[in-house]
Image 1 (tube, rainbow, N blue to C red):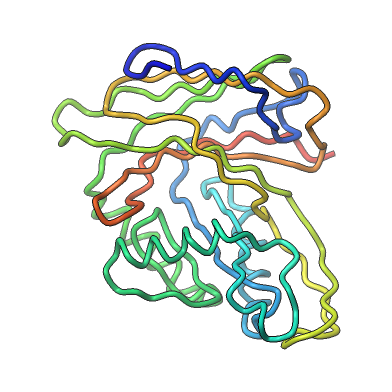
Image 2: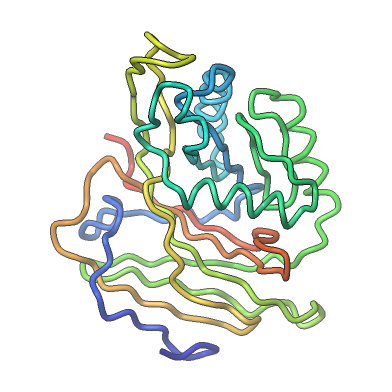
Length: 255
């Protein structure tokens, strides 16, 4: 594999989101105002209001929204059907990188840099506005092109005046909506609808400040019509994941 201005080519077939089936996919051509990641759990009694709020935020085209189910409340009597250990690790890594060790649900992490209680709309709006005003990290263009056979990701050069940055390119696959009946635990008897519920978080390349092209072949038969995906460019620090420098959503239009 090669980086820099070369092509990173992954030979193995990649399980793509439904948006990448054929040429019907679209890429949102607007630079997102913020990336909002909700960490939640089906076993968390305080989480349904945050799950509903994430659904409302997802209607804003200027935001990229993602929901991650964590597994550390499973012992309360209900095993979260969408949780994965790597999602819990992502939340803990954020806390370690920030230095505050704040790990809780519902928690929204904004642009990889700050967090707020996931049900507090005012705090989330304030955080988004504050980070936009004092943006200290470079904003890097990320473009996505989809074809019948491949996903092509292009990451632009970083600003010439910025410090050298090392960042991971992530492909995040999600279900646009999933409704889950909960049988036990703090939410026993409730039915909760999750929006942009993450199914897989896959690193697909490393960016070191120079233009990068990544091409991923599509695995036949692996797509579903209700899936979407996001490509994230996220800085890496010595303490863990850092600021999200760029993002591009790819999704099939709702029917």
